[in-house]
Length: 113
Length: 111
Image (cartoon, rainbow over all chains, first blue to last red; front, side):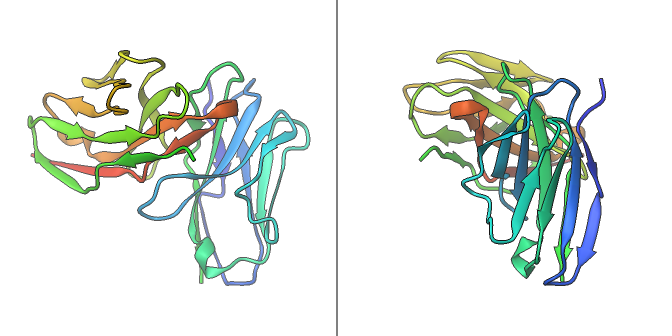
């Protein structure tokens, strides 16, 4: 089965610009997660979707970050405007509703200059 | 809140050495426990897991035992290989299918 797909793999932008990341989860996985992984740290959850509804976005900086999963499949994470401290790897993961194991994509490495 | 504390790295070992990476977790509830591995340039992938006390997860020669009395889930391997060089993350499950991750331990195995 195909894994979690993410694009782009790398992105370099200047501060105050906007950027969007795309994720396609494993087919049939109802739960989708976006994580931020800063260099030297573990992944930190930004938002969790169950189908197209938000389960947890308590750690999402909503003044600049937004995410959507309109049809309960693909998801987009946007940052607008970006700050220097947003430089990180953005990981998407998905899971089967009945299973706790998460399956991760390769991530998008963002550098904000 | 829920948290995971991992042994700080980096860890450098010679091939065929014994590996231990320590992990402790907060004891709220009865979480599932996981070890994920991240090879260079790749996303995290599940290495092993345990869902209840005294369970032992194992995969690719790695093992970890869910110790409720010490709130630990230490990762071990008897003989590491160069191909085991990666970053290892301990994680605990939380409500609603979320996981809390440790900060990772970088392992380098030298020939």
